[in-house]
Length: 306
Length: 185
Picture 1: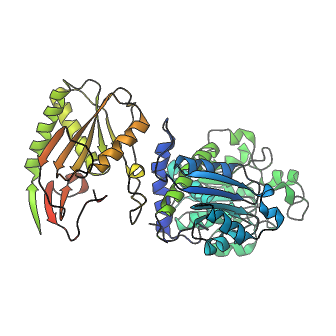
Picture 2: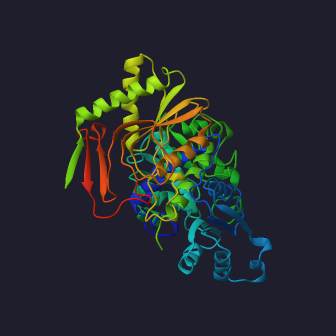
Picture 3: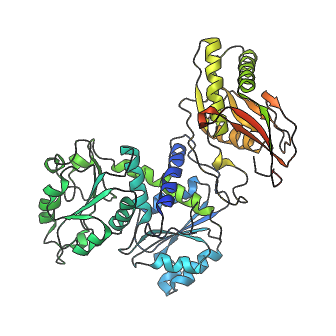
């Protein structure tokens, strides 16, 4: 049983709630393996995708999850909507709700926007990424994938590599994986991994080779090219030289290490193609699992009394 | 307070008889498979399959089916039912499926199960085996194989316990506080 009508962040979830979402997702993965990948569970409900930031993968994944639960889906395209005419955020939310939305999936460049909407609406608000705060469904699908591949999460050595400071994926992952009992380490340059992250119960490595030793799971983050030249790292070439995942570096991790990436990848910068397409990569499975996990979240939220 | 309807021996005898009936009606085990409905039907299907194999010396396909996502009361329940695994590791197309459940009551679970099966494939036929038929049907559904018919009132609950869950095999009838029905199956 989930306690809130919304999924705003992993921070707001209990360990029991996280496990319930992951267990339920296994049932939905069965559905995705069939010829008819659709169930009638949420027939008659309506889902609105409200994306204020460009996104293809996450939006498509939510759209498919919603459709496979038999809800009707509307993609609210921000550049052509009243938002450009200056409509306020809560007004947009109320309008979408008045159109009959039961689920509002929102992505926004500012942290906390989903929380604001959730407070003002009776529909279920699902955070699909807010600023540098959280991206909860990505963390849940990562946890689901790890559990599926490793059979457990507690006690695993899990490394997250790259721009942690600006990454909502990293933040949600840290909350989720530490709550489930993993030992999480962050690897990257000190400009992108501030010391205060230690308070989240993780260890920090500013040297790739040291950090990779004995790792069970490796989560590579996308380096945001627009940050180049802003003082965080000198150039993508230098970033790649110090923090890029190569076959040689990967050999420092455990033999059965799995490599993950939330996408989209910068091939040849944070990860070489031989690894991205290689036997240790579970990157495409993450995509499939994303649909199952999002179906699980929507199904469980629909049962919360309001 | 509760009353014992079947003990371990009764349950075993009923399953043995049902196994023979299944074989007889289907003239052997050709293209036959058993699918248990989560959760109560899964263990029963396993036991029936074992008995049929013992009698016919042939292995028959066995699966489990979760019906949570096909229920007709998702909008009115107090909380969403737990989603369990559906594991059917074979093609159901053109097979004769025997659906197995523990208690047949309103018939709504069976309706959901049939819808779920039709989304998985197109079986040649679907038959129904239940350990207990307690009456009170709300849909035109009837079992092909019944362990025991038990007339009940809506104020009673039928409980099937099985060794696989760590308790002794036993079927009991219990007076319940509230009236059953409408999605309580």
